[in-house]
Amino acid sequence: MRTKSTKKNKINVVTLGCSKNVYDSEVLMGQLKANDKEVVHEDINDEGNIVVINTCGFIGKAKEESVNTILHYVDKKEAGEIDKVFVTGCLSERYKPDLEKEISDVDQYFGTHDLPNLLKALEADYKHELLGERLTTTPKHYAYLKIAEGCDRPCSFCAIPLMRGGHTSTPIEHLVEEAENLASKGVKELILIAQDLTYYGLDLYKERALAKLLKALVKVEGIEWIRLHYAFPTGFPLDVLDVMRTEPKVCNYLDIPLQHINTDLLKSMRRGTSAEKTMDLIRKFREAVPDMAIRTTFIAGYPGETRAQFEELKDFVKSVKFERMGCFTYSHEENTHAYKLNDDVPEAEKEKRVSELMEIQGQISFDLNQEKVGRTFKCIFDRKEGNYFIGRTEFDSPDVDNNVIVDATKYYLQVGQFINITITEATDFDLYGHPA
Image 1 (tube, rainbow, N blue to C red):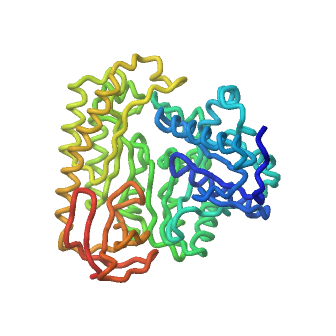
Image 2 (tube, rainbow, N blue to C red):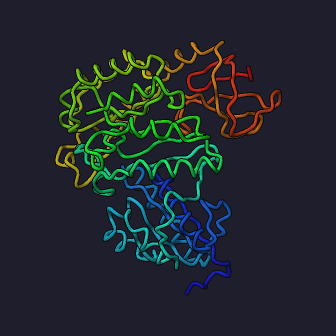
């Protein structure tokens, strides 16, 4: 029989998956702190005797990481190093009965909409008055702002609606209040996130209201950059481009996952678009905001994807020259529309296609970065690593995009501040420079 740990009650929140999960963990931690609970995020010393794991259930690799993390902390519990393990988030929402059966040593499982019940299990009360209050885990100069929850899109490969439910927008006035609160704490950059930014407002205002939201957020004093993540191509509100072009605070940056370019595969994916419509949309982006950095992602090895269809995707990437791009292998997810299809592309071939696509992107990124040498860009610096300061331009989002690197042995920069940097050298995914 294991013994109870002798640690003082401290709650360690462990976050897996995307920025939406980071946001949810921050809200949970804000609630716990308001209840006078001692709470830490991913404590490297594992001092917390109570662990809450916020899981991801998006694709196979993410689910595997979540399960391994749960097992890791269950082992610690069995060894008497911690007292309780709670699991929340997308994996728990999607597979709760299976998890309760297979990993029964977890004290309790909660879904994505179970925050009040999770707080109750942690002997805390849900405080409705904490609108927008959260304990941010990002560097203090930037923060995620989740503008909506859930998704109404019917994409064949995606299980997010199963885990997050339908689309629900947060009212503009609430988001402005949250942004003002973040700005008062030193946040300078807002990264707008949702399962689908472009659907924002349809449920509340009966129109796509992302542009209206941006016009309200740019008025928040202290906020200097506003960045858009996770836009959906079908039905993209073109008035957003007008705001991006005319409002200096809105970064010339858009994350818009396209997933593929072959029309037949897009139809099977239930994306509501075609190759022709996709290329027309990108043309409109380039015309409206010529220096916009477009970030996209693609799926390799979707059921039925032939080599010819993949070559079409490669040619598309070569011709468009996306500033930022990611690619991931198709994951066959239960209870999705695509699960009925034959997952006929071998895993090794999926990985090979990802490598081929990313090799093309590496060269594109290298060529585009060479064009930046000799130019000066406004950058924000996120951290210092060893002898280097690591920052970003407005064309780069934290963790996923290019870095701007400055030699800390030659120059002193203040983390969290905007500084003009002249680029002197560039590789495929990094820029090197010095203060202008």
